[in-house]
Image 1 (cartoon, rainbow, N blue to C red):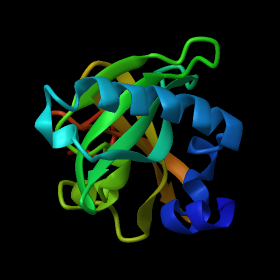
Image 2: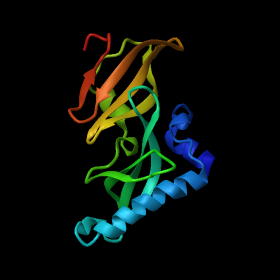
Image 3: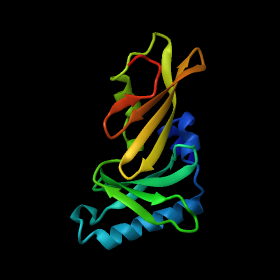
Image 4: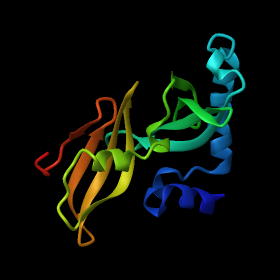
Length: 166
């Protein structure tokens, strides 16, 4: 299973998803409980399941939330956020859009910037600030050394906090 996740997200993202199976079950149960409690009110949840959990950090690098995609009929219909607290894993948020980790964010960022010829992005890290506010951090690399930081403000689809002259 771990090898499959590494293949799905890439080795440089592995540190974001290290969740033991028992922890995953704990958080997944909170997500399932939310679906069960809300599926009569939010019809898009009826028959859906939480998939592909991913840990998002806070702005200090601490594990903040675990975010599930919500799948129905083989389509992502939303996301569920659970606070990352083993003692009290409670539902925080539901949105009818896919979580950033299930979208090719790097591709979207590349379309918005101009990297120098030998530069590339690495170490994608997902940051959750508060409801509906996400940043995605990348290291800007050149000759295998980090030369800059790039922050992508997910909600506004804007690049922030770089020295790339964007």
